[in-house]
Length: 383
Image (cartoon, rainbow, N blue to C red):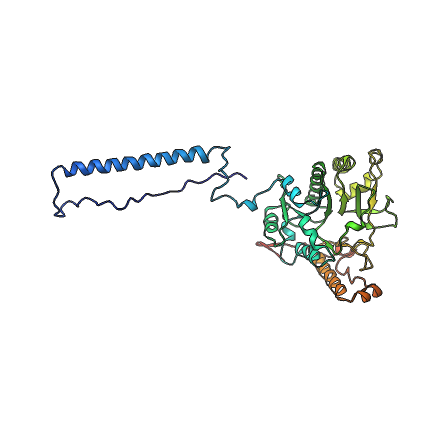
């Protein structure tokens, strides 16, 4: 973000010179003294004017030239670590050795203390061998407040500000509202770009708790795998209900073409979000023609409130799906993390023998879509 340097107002103080006696001071002045001092001060003034002119010209040439390498160093410019860094640079810094990154999106509605994003980061910290994954996490901020919040976190996250002209993504986007649909499709468009740049990704909603490293449980024979609201038992069964909140995608011609097709298909299915459109196009002959096989992740390992993973000895991630309203999500996710902490505090033999399960969902579930009040603004706060 270019910024022009402001010229400061400086003053020059020449000390050490003996001033002439003030008129009427009684001091003795030699003949021609007035002429001598007038000429002396004229010469000094001329030097000051010339010096000031040279400094001004130097400033105009150096700092106002568009290609000047110094134009970013303004005292009024944004600090270097808060500038919008190019996507390629962010991905390169975050990538694993095989060019895989973990991506989530964030807006202002999810950054309040104790809210969704805090719980999301906490899950990595208390999960089983998940803390190291944070260094590969790219947080895609959808508004300025979310971007600066990301930069201020103590986890040294990789932050990227995704701009969308004419759209405000800072508020809570309620399910199936116009803003919600725009946000979902902007996400698909962005992920297409990531694939085109040659990066693999695990996309995760921020309301998914990471409790174990999921990579050992991904399929190795497909480039596109996605979580489910409900899993029927067979990974290739297209009747499984996909959930776009969590997927692992490897970059390649197949997946790039698929994501481009997915994004363009929104025009044929107006008023539907990405997940509903995926349910339509997964049967399309084009998917088979490009050689892409869709695989669905087992809810035993990748569960959610729609179909909870019943065995805490196996679960990798838990998603606050089938849940409407931030307050409901936060309530149940806190309970979920408490359940996990209690589980990890048990002795290993007790954990394996007991096969403990969850005490959620409570506030979430189908009824949450009928019994939740959207948060309202009160100044800069939400109730």
